[in-house]
Length: 116
Length: 111
Image 1 (cartoon, one colour):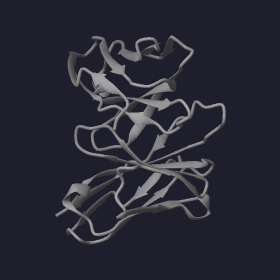
Image 2 (image 1 turned 30 degrees about the horizontal axis):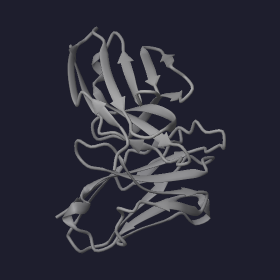
Image 3 (image 1 turned 180 degrees about the horizontal axis):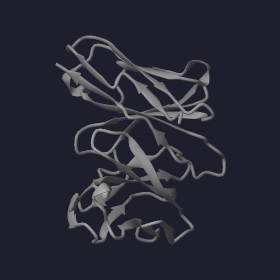
Image 4 (image 1 turned 60 degrees about the horizontal axis):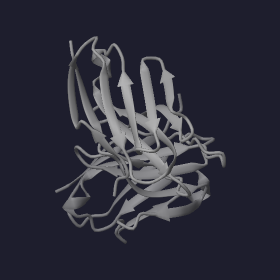
């Protein structure tokens, strides 16, 4: 079963360091989303792509965060100069978007980031 | 900001009992979805109900939607230990196709 895969599963870093996460979506899916989730909360939208185009980025997202989806396949999320407040689970999801709607998201298992 | 709010925040029931949780949202929607998350894992889609539907069933799940009250409920019948998880409602507002999630209801099913 080729679901959504994320790498790494866990990342521990020191404050000020840069980190990069990777997401491989389901191959035929045209949309890819990044969400962030902290303990006891629901996923918070960060950004999403349709094919290779980044269509929206959350207003809450700092300039330290950047995401790419070259060639409309896998995606990377980079956080520069990490802060302790960046500690969270970073979730990737993909979907097959159709104009008629009813889009279901398929999530990866997430990358748990701990900033010391 | 999160569109939906689930109620209650936590629920503990005995195996075999039914579990009901509610979701309220703020703006008009295209559809509403429910997802389940086991501890430390990603979310799994459970069921989707369109804005023009009032009730939907899937196995032991029953979802209702009241767009006039901007609310939905998820009923899990004959609960099992494996139903222990967090449950989230998610909505996509009109002309805004991304999903916004609530804070979730944590369900514990005791054997």
